[in-house]
Amino acid sequence: MNFFRLLLLPFSLLYSLILQIRNALYDTGMLKSYPPALPVICIGNLALGGTGKTPHTEYLIRLLKEEQNLATLSRGYGRQTKGFQYVSELSTVKESGDEPLQFKKKFKDKLVVAVDENRQHGIEQLCQDHPELDVILLDDAFQHRSVKPGLNILLTSYSRPYFSDFLLPAGNLREPRSGSARADMVIVTKCPEKLSEQEQDAFHRAIPGKVIFFSSIRYGKLIDLKDDTERALPKGDCKTLLLTGIADNEPLKHYLRQHSSALEVLEFPDHHDYSEADLIKLRQVFESMSEKNNIIVTTEKDAMRLRQPENLNLLQNLPIYYVPIHIEFKGDDSSEFHKLIHRYVNENKRRS
Image (tube, rainbow, N blue to C red; front, side, top):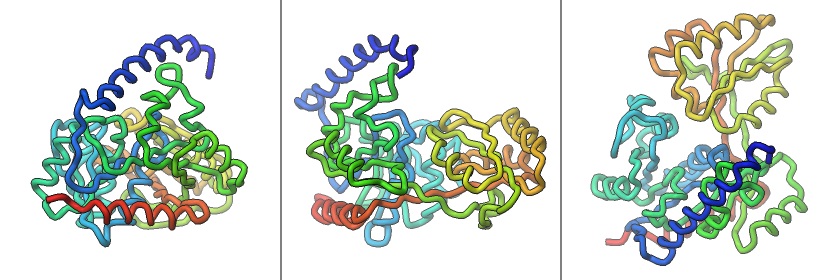
């Protein structure tokens, strides 16, 4: 913790007291939590972001979509609409937010995608409109105590686990570490490729009494932002300009440095809404790079925002690609994780 954040610890203690009172009201039943009538899986974290909720939600979608009628429900961060909305392939980021639109474009009619800042209302609306639904995935709803999911999956990153972090504003936690008690399982995300048994044991000691899994990020081939054609990363003397508006771009920077003669980075805050000035700057930086085979790389989430028509006009003639990411569990974790998910879903079918 740097010195400035250390000065903010008194505010973190006050914030912690407020949140602990709120959680106690839910834990004692003084504030009610809505129990959905069908299996609901929550994927969330204690930190502000950057733990990999989106790719882990996609992992669950791939796991369940062939056997279950599936929906995702998110707040739709950054959208300019309010209330309950269905997301279609023709929706815009301003209508739905970037991550819900990414889900819909990727999984199409295999997935019902909705957004609602009121998760209870969203679940009730989904159940009313789609009585065939078997499972709802709640993306980033760990702190929404007004809904009681049947299964809570807590994500924490390998490089900054919640048990070594502090509450806002001194740290990055949005609720106290004690909130982890609500988790049915913990996934340690963004692990290095080689994770020793000693490192895994250290996490088990720091998170006692929980089922723990370990996952890593795997990057796919580059996909052209404009026409979705695939290409491999270029070889030889090629500089890469990375454009990101996500919470944690360190793993992607590390990956691209291994495949580029040099890497330049334009970084913006998470869910950044790119302006004309941002994209003019992007072009200027790219055109100042010397090698001939240079490319621009961005994330799949950023691609949803960059694909707005007004942005595509500013990106004409630029070689810009996004890189999809996938989740890979360590060792035998995937088979055990699959068993737990399928068991929960099959044992908690919709109540009449």
